[in-house]
Length: 180
View 1 (tube, helix red, strand yellow):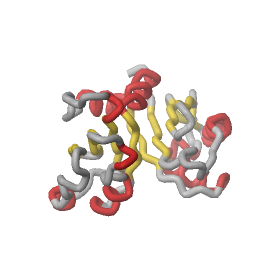
View 2: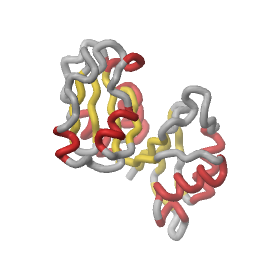
View 3: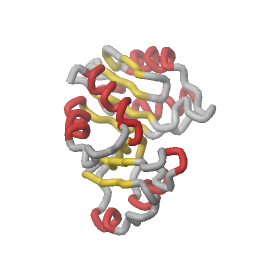
View 4: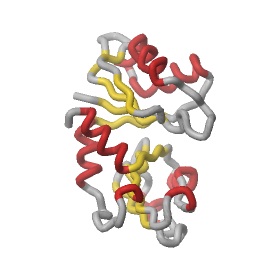
């Protein structure tokens, strides 16, 4: 069973540089097995963990604390199983998106409270649409993500969750790499 970790804010915007080769080696030291990465923005896959290793005890904590201790970065980590990524892809509420590059998914560390979801302003990003489904926010950017007011920071503040987003192309690549 392949697990995917999505690290927020790695190697984007010039901050928090973390070479993927170093991350793979480090994860091997933590007890992750068959470690792979996809592009340099913090997408990590593994097939299992060594019994008794830090990764086997708590993969998210091992990654979060290990990156903080080794590189000095506080990096939020959200994990999913490969089958969950398939369900996210198959549950796309925006099949009518004119371009795939306008589709993104924010992965949340937990499902937000329904009252917080209900309080979200559906008109915050004119031309943009979003749908919160459990631990995921589907985003369809009508004018591109760079100018949208539907940012990860906004969703985190409004919903009280940790989020990291990936574009649709990355989601599909992670599914393929996972063998799901």
